[in-house]
Length: 189
Image (cartoon, rainbow, N blue to C red):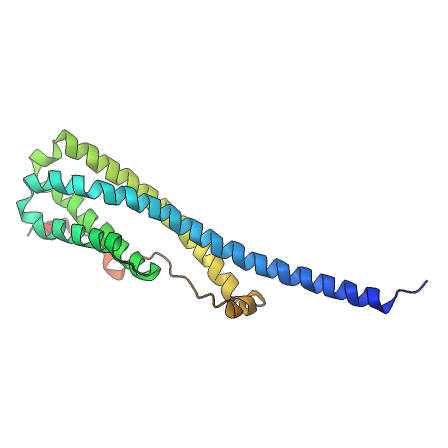
């Protein structure tokens, strides 16, 4: 019994189509994982954005000298909410918000009456909790971005990525300024 050439050709094209479909689906799955991770961060950032006005309002009562930091936090929050910014720009702005919030929390140490304000303590606790959730979500996002970028750059899925005009994604990264040790004394001078 011989195998017909049409069956061989059909089998070859079937296997080829299966391989291409599998590679295509891997790329799509990887892209969707990045989108999902970013939307998770988005939800947590919205919680933080909603908390910031309350935190700033309570802190303003006590912290006249920290007006610059408070103004910068509000400006950055407004920029992210009101403007249509790219993902990479948004990553940068969100990192700036995190840095300013860190400075605000450290600056609270100079205001004993604020540290004992029950409303502020609750807001600070909520902010700390949200920041921890954002940190975990950023790790998940960075993992998804690494997998996506690998898929976009590695052969043979890079052919599909190029054909579909998929670009590398930017990870959340700490700036070189944030890697340096914080000198708390300098924050109050």
